[in-house]
Each structure stands twice: as C-alpha cells, then as structure tokens.
Amino acid sequence: MILQPIMGAAITAISVGVAVLGGCVLRLPWIRRLWSWHWATALAVGGVAVMLLGNGIGLSVSFTDPDTHETLNGLSPAAARISFGLLVFAVANWPAPRAAAAGQS
Image 1 (cartoon, rainbow, N blue to C red):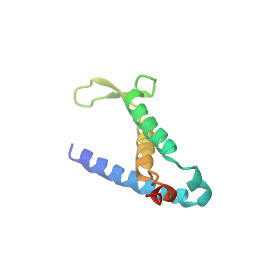
Image 2: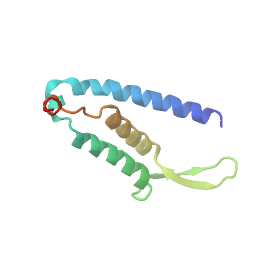
Image 3: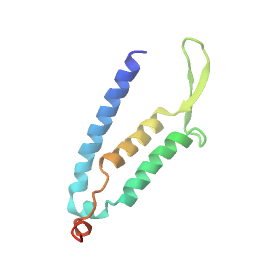
Image 4: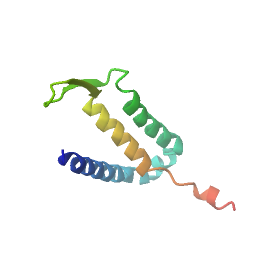
C-alpha cells in the first residue's frame, strides 16, 4: 500500500511534464490563434466527464481484490489515463488573456 501514493505522484509528475512539453506545440503562431479557452474548457470538461460517467457508458473493467476475492467494477485504465491526461493538458496550457484585451485599460 505504500507504493500507491508514490506511484500516483510519479504518474502525475509524468503527466504534467508531458502536458507542458505538448504545450510547446501551442506556441506555433497558427496553432496559438486556434487555441482558446473554448478548447481548453472542452478538454477539461470532457476529461472530468469521462472520469465521472465512464462506468455508466461502458468504459469499465472488472477487477478482483486479491485479498478478499471480491469483484469490483472500475474505470478502464486506458480511459482513466486518457481523461486524466486531457484534464492536465487543458489546465497546464490554459490560454492567457489576449494582449489586445490587456491593453485597453
């Protein structure tokens, strides 16, 4: 049980690193113009929706507890990783306010 929080921290650190590196693509001028808070919000809400509703829409897998031999139903590991990655990417690369809007004051 001690490895679970350590692995959680490691996976989160890797996810944030990949999101920040992936965000370098957003620095290209033609992609920067397309990246807006609409896209970031859609990715973040989509990631959270899959995490919350994934079991209900069939993105689930059955797991067996090795100690109690009880069968548990949980979110598919692939769906969990992808939705978490989308959420982290959206938050790490949230668009900054436009320079034109900042200069109006």
